[in-house]
Amino acid sequence: MSSIPRAALVGGLLVTALLFGGCTPQERGGEDRLPGPLPEGVTFEASPSAPKAPSIDAELVDGTPVAGDLLWGDRPAVLQFTTAWCTRCDEQQPVLDGISRDYGDAVTVALVAGDPSEDRDLLLEHLEELGVGQPVIVDPDLRVWRSYAVDEPPMTALVDADGRLVKLWPGGADEAKLRTELDRIVQRTGG
Image (cartoon, rainbow, N blue to C red; front, side, top):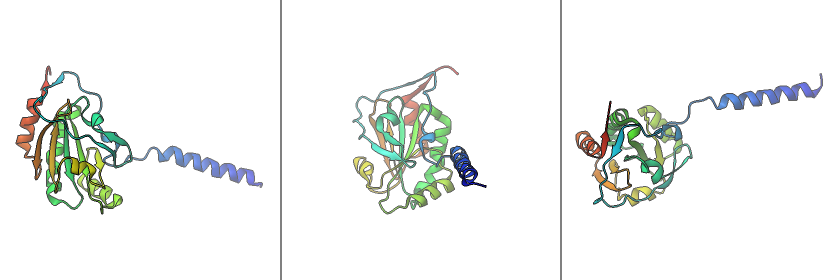
């Protein structure tokens, strides 16, 4: 046989690998974890006396660029500043999961992972172990952390749909207090 069938076989295998390679699940914390379209029947209360939230210009763990207007341009956002080594952050994950479940696409819930020494593979492994369902912003140089005055994790920030910093919770948000603030700014009408 000539080398043409072998080349065709190799080419066919490469095409197959590329086609099926796209069918693998995306990394936890990537673009597929961003909220979908804004649900109908939801409006938002502004917090005009709150200061503007610091801007965000970063990437999600899968390399997707992300900015503040993507996170809170049309809905409030809960930002959880975290690291893979922070056990108290891990304890906050069920709170974030509950907020994500109960508010759905009406609220963006995102983690901001910041640790200059943190290995990306270790971070991804940690996200998988925790079952993180939210988008994860990587902040290895701590620019985003510093702009929100985060000294140590966890820290929770609530930003309204107008991009105003409503509340910061050093040590992480108490679930009841976070829900009270969200219920004040997220108005649901109908069903």
